[in-house]
Image 1 (cartoon, rainbow, N blue to C red):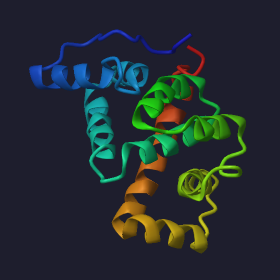
Image 2 (cartoon, one colour; image 1 turned 135 degrees about the vertical axis):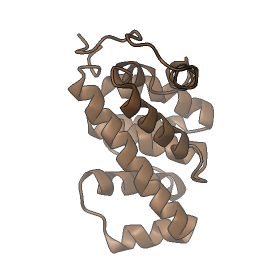
Image 3 (spheres, one colour; image 1 turned 90 degrees about the vertical axis):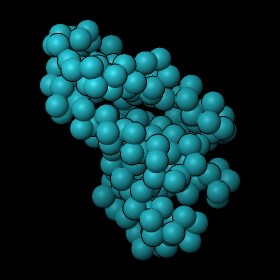
Image 4 (cartoon, rainbow, N blue to C red; image 1 turned 135 degrees about the horizontal axis):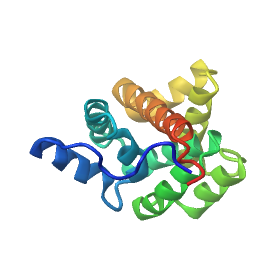
Length: 171
């Protein structure tokens, strides 16, 4: 059972209410997380800005969602997985990638152009970034993209940890 109410408890300014609506709407990917976060509107607003930034860093949506699913799996967060998997499919993440991440076998068995994103996310979450992995990613997306990818992995890792803290992973 969630530790925080998933209904808006405080009065919000019209600007803040718009932000709340945007991050909690169906298809946003993290609605329950943000519903809980809005127990502290200022903090939730800042994280909503980060959420928006994830979509603006220039990575293709399927790459972003491949990383997000990897973090959800590694943090054993079914709530996050369940909210992101349909979005990943819509963004073009292949069933082979989704199944490989879910089974814990990715990046093995995946095409290199798909497996590299899983591999990168695994190295981030395990604090084991190798130079060869970093170089492979910068070859594909440049320094700016690699920084964005690292940010994306850390963002979804944080959201998975918040879900666990708020007891949303079992909701």
